[in-house]
Amino acid sequence: MSVTFNSPRGSIVALVTPMLGSTSPYTAIDEDSIKGLVDFHVESQTSAIVVVGTTGESATLTSEEHCNMISKVVTEVDGRIPVIAGTGSNSTHEALFLTKEAKARGADAALIVTPYYNKPTQKGLIEHHRIIANEVNLPQILYNVPSRTACDMEVETVIELSKLDNIIGVKEASGELDRVKAIRAGCKKDFMIYSGEDSNAKDFILNGGDGVISVTANVAPAKMSKMCEAALVGDPERATELNNELMLLHENLFVEANPIPVKWAVEQIGLIKKGIRLPLTELSPCNHENIKIALDKASLLNQK
Image 1 (spheres, helix red, strand yellow):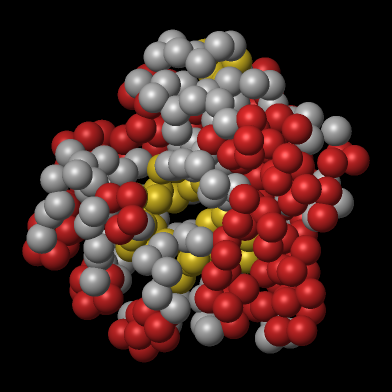
Image 2 (cartoon, rainbow, N blue to C red):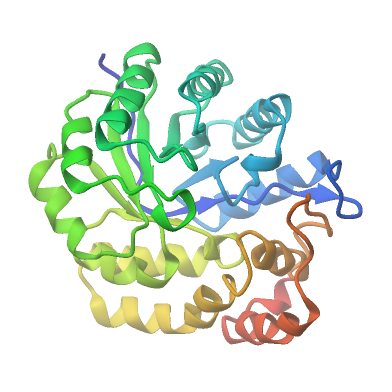
């Protein structure tokens, strides 16, 4: 199945889902904030937006909310940069449904996390992704994050799946930098390899990666974009200089489960209001100061 997609390189934001109201199972999505978030990223040279991924609280959205968020972001982006929709699930049936909906609602590609909790074998991963690729004519990016899914997609599995025309890349968040060159060596020339960890993104790109799907970019999109650009053109000194300004953010945005810290940080710079959905809770007060220090080091607090 052949698809056409101009694969983005550089900094791709894993967008937060803005919410409004007290923390509960029913915290509402704040649709009025979506336009501001989208414009912020387009103006800051973010290469693409991932909507309703892990950082977008996909695990606690209803199917209707999930699909409506894709539609809202696609509408607000209006073709200015690619929109990649998170459509993964531990149910192949649900992942198929969400991927079909992403295509119907105008997403440019899908990001499909490995099935979580039920721990499929490598054979199961291949069949899961093969069925989705065969049934949905949409570019698809594999997503390996074993620390959250308890399922590690091995390099050989990525290579096998890369043979399918519309599997066009992987978000690799195992933390193992040596996988970049192994995947590059075994996959088709135009296969995209993205870091899933801000803390290693610079080195990941310098080792042959194409960019990062970033949490930090929610608050520092322009600097993340410039850092990635420097790494992509092979300027390690400039990339390191820019990354050093962001390291405190890379570290402190994960002091609690993602996206708890980053939503608090995005609120601090004035882009969203307070709101997160259970079982996630508001950032603990003991972590406020360190994130403020990290924002200040990156010269971000004056954006509010």
